[in-house]
Image (cartoon, rainbow, N blue to C red; front, side, top):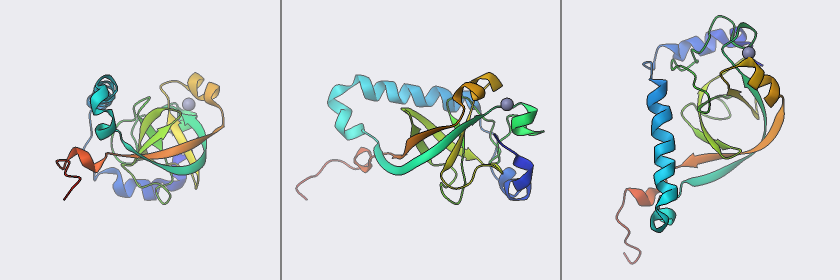
Length: 159
Ligand SMILES: [Zn+2]
């Protein structure tokens, strides 16, 4: 659970640096990308994202309700609106904002922080408090997701 006002000063400093990003655009883009990767078997190796294990993290859930997010609602510390299945709150000193993280098979974007999110702890955004309650406190192996460089450069294994 979050208590954002504890770090409000830190969070506010980056609050206005990012323009509000449409949640739906991000949500629509990611699954389509994953789907096409999964369905094109011949491309599977070239398009496979690079997964770097970050270790075991404690994961909890938070939602826009007052007890989780106070007066912030869905507004994240990076200025974008939090989106279920997409937004994760991290300790930015452990995981930089903008990192894409795979947790239990879902790819989240690190774009929020919280006073209760320190060290190896990730707070996952849910739409409802009931889902947070169901999530409870878990531990999960977290992977940093990076695009394989092969996607940009033409394959030239001999040069
Ligand atoms: Zn809540």
